[in-house]
Image (cartoon, rainbow, N blue to C red; front, side, top):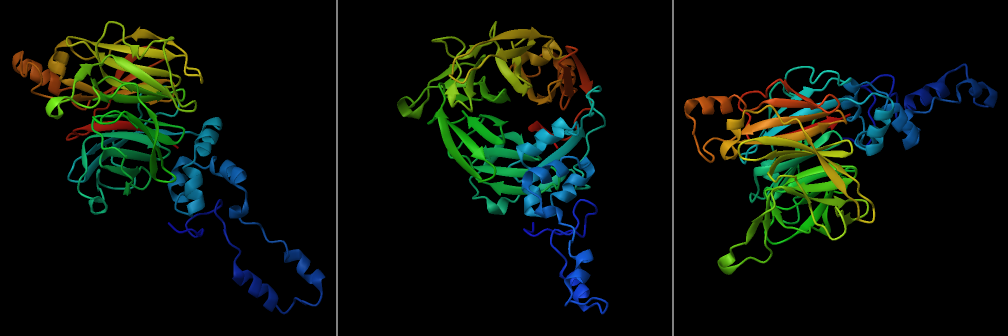
Length: 439
């Protein structure tokens, strides 16, 4: 991307970002003009100021009113435009003007470097669950893009990667590698890996930065990633070392839910002492830099009745959690009351569970990838793992019933309190995750 602006591909918004020297030459060479008399220059001596000369706040106001279809082209005009379009201030302005558009993106990445992606526009009024069927990215006629594996050192793994959306970009964080996927252009670029190698960890985006925790046996560090500087740093130590956990963000708080609690240091022969904390959730207040306690002396928030967290996401000020109880699923809302001092509290509210047959949950065969869409919807994509627990128990009937769920899109209406089913994912998606991109 060029640092200098190029106006030839755009119209009204991006007129010349630099004055055209040819206009000045023509003016000086015109025979009707007498340069010895300044008054002859007055009618043309006030050229229109280019839009690039505007201060950032005014330019952001202009950009925030541009139709969504023009935004990808604007990001290619110059580096300054691209940075402004990626800023949190841009999203806040579009939200205030009622122009924010949301799109769901499902990603599946293999260690061979093949990224499968599909997008689903969400109805702007949110009156309907979804507008159309899943489709390849607008930037490509194919649903596949190749990751730049040449830029990686070869010691990476994306078998249990996590994703987080910041602006128009989705960051795919694996073990020893991070990729940035541009949802406007379809470009995939390598970014800095986490400081500590992680697998099956928690990740979430808050305030334009990404936070990760868990998934590492020898550290409890919470890392923060700044997309602007492309750098990770340690910001805190988690109260529990979790493995197989899930991340969510709501109200400026990073939630780390589910998984196993891994004992520090390891035992004889390098074995680690693992304890189940699958139904609990730790909360880190990002701005305060403190862990939120449910009550004085208390630890993590614990799901009523136990269960294993298999899906979680933030929507508005709340966290929504899908829990498995082996023979059934439950769905909960956590309403936190976090304070900057680290104290606070909250309570669980049980909601209508996802419409999944009870037998599908036997042996832990069903998992979820969840994302909040604004403050009105929760979308859950269903994963199916065969050969778990009782395997094919129940015969072919159970297998076919579970297979019919693979790639199912379930939409929970927060206000109505009901689940509906949206268009299923395209065939062939495995190990997928879903993110909501706003622009």
